[in-house]
Image 1: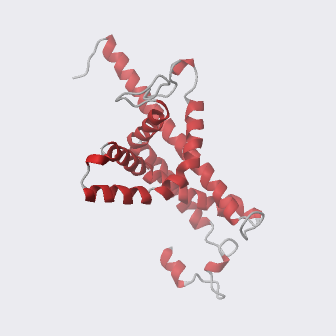
Image 2 (image 1 turned 45 degrees about the horizontal axis):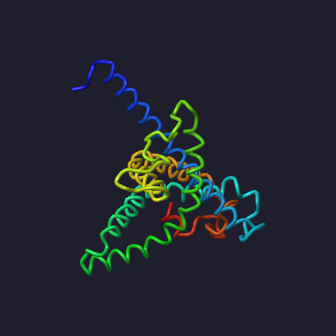
Image 3 (image 1 turned 30 degrees about the vertical axis):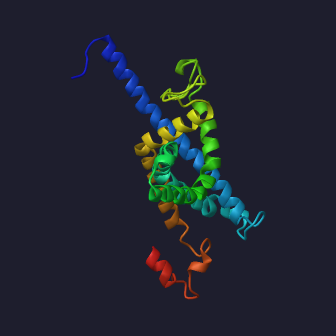
Length: 222
């Protein structure tokens, strides 16, 4: 049962504040991913950079792609972080692993290279956003992050320095699976809503036949 004394009340308020801060943190990660996907969509498709779309397509058409990619990424950041932590644990005892486990570990490492490259910029932006939001004396002078997993002095389990910092952020990404999943669903919902709006010949001309109807592939997609 829960404590009803002062210590119990303090504990309850700390946990309540941590739950709220987790949503802020998930939202900050979503903004970081959206900034990267927006940058990629605009530079990939804008006629002024590398594509063929005019600039008046940025707000609805190109950012719709960013919403879609952000929704997908936010739903998989927690499994991604879990895979990275699992690989790190395997490499700590790599010498004692059976031969087949070593092969699987090396193959998994190769497969994770591309996701790591894709998320690297979003990761850096998340570091900036979350530290900017959780700054201030009201959240602690040593470590402004809400879970206090990392501090400059070191980390538990004999992990120190930059490795501790990356480890703690990966742990945060795993524990935020509920928040990041819901944020990802929000972005996917916005993408679906925008998708119905831009399902028009002025946006998606190549979707339509000369008769004005959608092609069969796009009808099936819708």
